[in-house]
Length: 192
Image 1 (cartoon, rainbow, N blue to C red):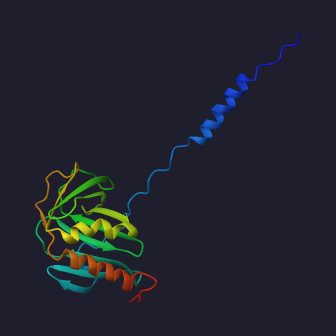
Image 2 (cartoon, helix red, strand yellow; image 1 turned 30 degrees about the vertical axis):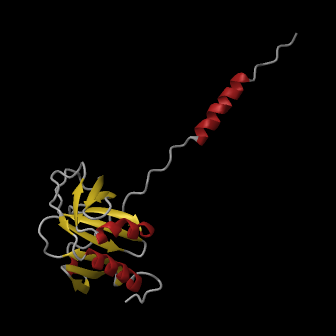
């Protein structure tokens, strides 16, 4: 009587090979943009100033590339907002941190009079914690800053929470940086 070879080992080997092909690890999330904003708002063309905020337009190779709303000369940690054609940025400057440049950290903003904001930020070499967001998420993310009175930032990487940041005028600053993006950075804008 002839013996029929067992198909079980071959099937088991095939199942392992198929599983190995199907369970490749997912690609890592994209790293936040490392392109740094200018160190101060005076480095660009000043478009508007109001209530301590300055909105500037910055150029790369002669073409408009970034709109920045920042508070010049404010003591301690400062908050700024920036837009490019495709993304928005929330910038925290001057907060003491134990993180190394290039490290992604979690920032929690407790906003008085508005919803808390949770951000994923990268520490840049100039000490700025930059949360970079696709533009579609930017307006909703910064809305609490526009409507709150003060913001306090917390996070495991912040060694000493900075004193509360006054948000007076932030609604005007956010609206102005959004308008700057429309006028100067998008295809529908004038590209001045």
